[in-house]
Length: 371
Image (cartoon, rainbow, N blue to C red):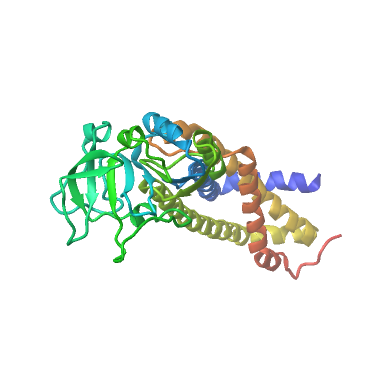
């Protein structure tokens, strides 16, 4: 009880006689803990976003039976996982009797390999049609016919390009068998995906190239895809600009958080040591009046603890009040009550440990110690 009364008297003396110093200390601690709470809340939110969002944008699917064609067509038409930038199915040939047939959805090809200069890809109408049109792969010395017959069906060749099955299938974990000539060239036709299925071609490989990163854990994504593509091997690859930007933002915030934490720790250490030295004479008077070193030491810790708790409560209330406004400017905070306790406990622990030498020095006196 004596220590409690002494604590009350000491704090009362501080706020009555050293008002400016006490306000400065409280405000400094308030900003230290407010910044810590805010950054922990922001980091928690970014971590949750990382956990809830996959970095994958491409899905490579290897069918294990011919019956996958109807599932693939239904998936292409409905796009249940979101918009696809490009998607394609490949029917490979190992005999050399016909080209490698690629059914394409999308109007861009530059993510894999560009067409020849000045040539264009399918437009929106063509890629969703069942027309017998094709883009044909040729070597630099190869023929450029206007028609190509496959399985008795004539395809009008609307463009030519130096295309490569290897480029299309390079993201798969395993290799595929397909025909190449003595010079290592493959024969390939790209046709609209609806035409591919209507003409009875069977996918040996399926690639879905999403516009945005898939959401959810990898296991959940694979389970979801498996529901649309039964009896298939599924492999997730690629990353989006959005997910890369999010990852960079998280790393930058981590570095900023570490810097703020170090500055906060230094500030707490500086404030507490300044507090001890400022009141050193008063503590020595307590010892002169009979207080033991242990009691003075305990009094110091309690005084600093009370000031810290007062600043923490202020920071907590301020952050709760500011959260709606922070949300309004796009700064999301996710912090639980246990985090407030942990940050406060760590702050106090660091204060006490880093100031042990100063505490010991102040508590040393030539005055006669009481019992």
